[in-house]
Length: 244
Ligand code: 13P
Image (cartoon, rainbow, N blue to C red; front, top):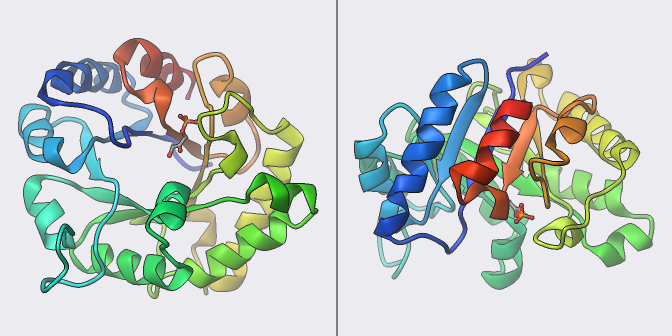
């Protein structure tokens, strides 16, 4: 089995005053050395978090596919790396919806972070309409194929399955539905990769918290969690790290 990977996605939350929370999380991560932990704060906090807390991995929440140029407001992989990020979340459903990111964009972004030597967490997940229509597995496998980078390897690539309807809603899929989807993703990875597909970690994300983490993390092919709201403080995030 893969080492568990617990990642906090702070989204658009956190001023400098929140650095203490990253410190608290770093301490819990240190005490749970059998688990890999990363925090993805807003880009404005990456440099100070990485400098103050070198023992916990700090990630970005997005990265532009180009290495430089006329892309106002965007950050390149070298920029987030220089700031201290060791990985980036890519293709989160909020960015696919709000910034109209396509599978092709996400693939190019993953290849860009890889060439800078960083890790990538590619997010996939169906909407409620798609699940109700019975197309969840085909939608997610389609996103995975379309977003899948060249040279994929479990050393740097992680997949996060996040059903859109479970994000920030307090609704979590049945364990059997998570199991079915993660098995489908695992089998798709086997088709997409010549070898090593077993080593690509597949995280679950969507309303994970201290109360449901143990059950979700015990599902076959669930190699960790991508956590939003419950990653914002050590009090809430700590129990998830401990459950892994
Ligand atoms: P919540 O944990 O707040 O539901 O968010 C999940 C998520 O989108 C993590 O990327």
